[in-house]
Image (cartoon, rainbow, N blue to C red; front, side):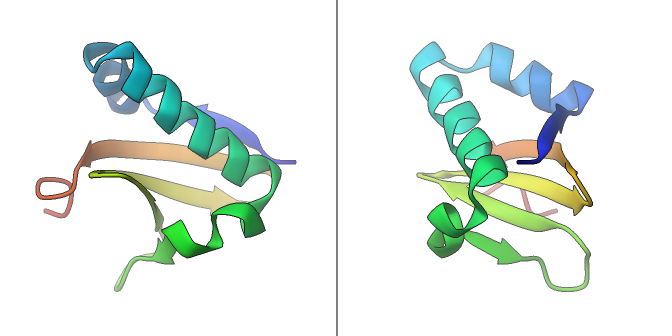
Length: 83
């Protein structure tokens, strides 16, 4: 199992969205940290970057997987996350 660390901006976005949606996103991140194969269909490597993205409905979670730590860097809507 990997430990999960959230960036300041990710926590800010989670605090501003509806509780049911933030709980769903946190649950999916925790599920990936515990068993990466359970979310294999929803996780992809980002082109030109060492980061990965997790798809949760219309939301995307940009993560960095380093050893035993899963850093959640950014959370955003499908259209606005890829800048």
